Image (cartoon, rainbow, N blue to C red; front, top):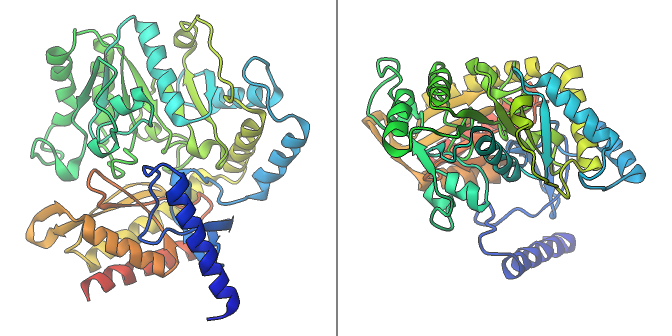
Amino acid sequence: MTDSEVEAQRKTAEIQAKHAEFLFPSVANYYEEPVVLDSGEGFRVKDIDGREYLDFFGGILTLSLGHCDPRVTTPLKAQIDRLGHVSTLYPTVPIVELAERLARITPGKLKKSYFTASGTEADETAVALAQIYTGAQEIIALRHGYAGRSMLAQSLCGQAPWRALPSQIPGIKHAVSPYCYRCPFGLTYPSCELKCATDVEELIETTTTGRIAGFIAEPIQGLGGFITPPPEYFQIVADIVRRYGGVFICDEVQTGFGRTGEKMFGIEHWGVEPEIMTMAKGIANGMPLGATVATPEIADAFQSLTVSTFGGNPMSCAAANATIDVIEQEDLLTHVAKMGKRLREGLDELQRRHPKKIGDVRGKGLMLGLEVVADETAGDRTPDPVATAKIFEEAKKRGLLIGKGGMKGNVFRLSPSLTVGEREIDEALAVLNESCAQLES
């Protein structure tokens, strides 16, 4: 080992030790030996030792255009030199331009925006807005769902591992997840007649006052393991929710901005127009920004004073405007559909090669998941987080970074940059195949 390699290892160990000493222990890192990332460009990142990795998780579906894309960083740098921060107390060109863009590209009658610094805040704003508009308080959320890390968001969360405290916010009811692979009713689609959707009506009638403020859901449940509802699901649920006085809040934090292919927003695949939509992550290619977009009638119901210090920051808005420019100008919605098809076909083939451990392949576009189980060939769908962790480590050894999710941590989440090409997809598939084979050897 060279002197430079020894020095790099020493520095890596030092950073890992300081992370453990000075950050909350809840700030968990991936991998048995966390990767200390130092730089990135496009689809690839380098750690502090200089080792390169193919990034197929993109900061949790955040880097729409990849790392340090000059089409975003150049206008961002120009904005920093011109105006960095003012808060929402002052209108700026970037925030107005972004709000106008969102009114144009979001579905249905969505028009007015409120900007924050995160998806958590966006969901908080959406729930408050639904309650103000309807005059009701109770909210329907989904099991296996995730909405952020605030008190409200944790109360909305449908996963025990991500709840640091018991529910602090009253009036939240959790409907069953549209999780076809693990149907909570033991049924099979489509003979199930969408029991997971129709059951929302009984939930409202038996556990609420019968008049609700709204229903909040991700089109594809992100942290839940990329759980993808049947085609009819959202239309059925939205109709029920509206009959009981509520509005549909669509959480597009992970599915938004072309991630699912063909459409700008995930819910468009289900043909439903929400009254309120939230977004963050991919909106600004890594800059902190959240947005809540609502119909004018609903947005105008919020009459009390409110301010967001960092919401709509000129730098974040400049990055968002640049990101949307690239998505539209390069027709990335079509590209994502094409590359998503190639990745999905490769994952289906991976499942055929490793039928015992890979129980399910699901998702849309470049938001695809693999669920790892005890033995699918024997009908044993017990989640296998141990095998998942081993494959996860093997992929890292071979230079591939991917995500994990699911209640038991047994679902791989693949979400490369929207600009990813055939070469990178084939490289990732080859690594996954080798990693699964290594587990079985």
